[in-house]
Each structure stands twice: as structure tokens, then as C-alpha cells.
Amino acid sequence: MESTPTLTSTPNKLVKVMQYIINNGLKVPFSMLVLALIPVPYLYFFNTFLSAMLGGIVVGAVLSYSISTGLNLIIASIPHIIIELAAFCIWASSLYYLNLWIRNKLHKRAINTTFWFELKRCVLHYIRYVLPLIIIAACLETFLTDKILTLLN
Image (cartoon, rainbow, N blue to C red; front, side, top):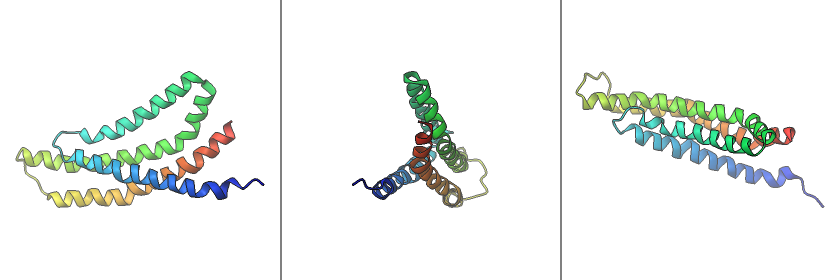
């Protein structure tokens, strides 16, 4: 007898969602935070650029193999990619002010806030905006992308 795919695949998909959230919701933002602590402007944007470039490389490789498969992959990935990149951009823009504070402190410029205030503001932006978007992107990638690919194929 054939079992229903939703019952057997749901735990695997939930594990995939959790892995995605741990990687893109914790590891990547933490690495961006560490890069923001280095007083070099825009260094923390590296992960965002890398994420966008790797997505483009994968799509380009698939498009060179098959136009229809590549277009299907692009269409299926658009919702997830837009939300993920938006979350990374929001996080990077929040880290800009922390990095600016560090650079201003090193150049002995007048600063009206403390380091802890800037860090607290970054963490609040992360909790309010970035983490929910990453969770939505994880669910979209795991559940919606497969459904769109199935419909298009």
C-alpha cells in the first residue's frame, strides 16, 4: 500500500525548516554582526551579496542546462528569495549604525549614544523584523517552492 506523502514528508520538511532557520536566522546574522564589529564600512554586507550571487549562479547554471527548467526554478524561487534578501538587507542596514558608531568612536568624533544602545537597537530590529522574515522564507522555500515546481512541471 502506498502511504500518503504528506504524513511521511512533514517531519522531514519541519527538520528542513528548522535547519534553514538555524543557518539563515542565527548563523548568518551572527556572522554579519561579527563583521559589523570590524571598523570597515559595509564589510557586513558581504553575506547579502554572496547569497544573491550564489542564487544567480545556480539559476544561471540551470538555465544553461535547460531553459524551461531554469525558468521554472526562477518562478518557484522568487517568493523565497525576495523575502530572504529583504531580511538580510534589513539586518545589514541595522548593523550600519552599529558599525558607524564604532568607526566614529575610533575617529574620536562626537557620539550621542552608547555602544549598548546601538547593539540593543540592532537586536530589537533582528527580533521584530529579520527573524520573522527568515521564518517566513524558510516555510516558503520548504513548502511553497516544491508546490510551484510541481505545478510548473
